[in-house]
Length: 456
Image (cartoon, rainbow, N blue to C red; front, top):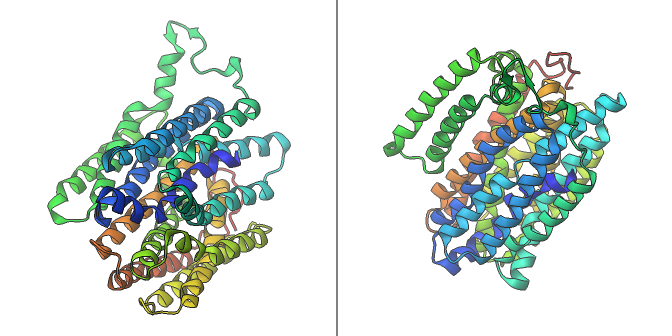
């Protein structure tokens, strides 16, 4: 469960220190290598809720094995890629391949809680959050080490042994589906269960959701008025999606239930703006430490060790409590303070200031992921735990897409100090919005409905 869920964050973050070496090796500027970030998030944003819904219907085993196997294929393609186009294709495969890990883990946590009668498996949820954010933070350091030893292609090749290990563990440990509960097992009254399955999956709803999300994310990748048609297409697909879901007997995303679940909607909104800040720092700050400050990829990864250590400590300590409001407020404050310090950085700043920024960011890194994850666990409809967890990742990746666009627009051809400061203002605005969304959220501390427990 833990290994499968970390495949996405490790691929999300390990690329941060590889962007500059890849650009130099393939002759691509920062505005083009940014597609290596966007491609993975585009695929994952679309795939997480879709695969999550499939897990809700079929169970985690077969979706986990299929998706994780694709990660290994993507690792081979990326390691052998002759140009940037193929490399971007490998990142798309990685995006789809890593979709099952986190929703499958959340579904397993929910099923085990129901089996054992423990409503709040806090230790397991904390372990899941710590594993994910540990990998997310250590990714740049690991990437820098791999690049220093064998070059940037090893950051893709790493996926092969990880995928093999995850598939083997999945085959050995994941529960097998009950043959009596197979959705397509029988024929009843002339109507096949396959037809019933198609209705349960809501394929038209999935298609409209995909059209809406892809159009929106393509617009966010390169914000410009000339691409207004993408925003219009996203709005049209979104309207059609809403009409479809409100009329479907078994919708892909139950908008009627979701619309009445204010706490869950607020959690999704906070996830979006929180990840604008987190990933702007991860990609923008890391690129600047290499190009604007002059660190090697390995040393750029080392500079984030304070964040890694503090994030782990904060997660372990705060994970003992199921309360989320305090975590969210302190995480928001940490983001704002870190952004203010970034505005004071320059190419001649002392190294300790870079370490200070990383240290401050360790606080929100250790708090926000855990609080958001626990919120979804308690606020979501238990029968849609996997798809709700997938939607959390989708909103987070939309935030990461905004961060990627902001980073590309701020830096242009070179990650200089002026670009870093422009990006810091974007991050500061998102951090303030995150704080306001938490301060004025009156649903924190109340049940989300559907018989769930309080989220704070």
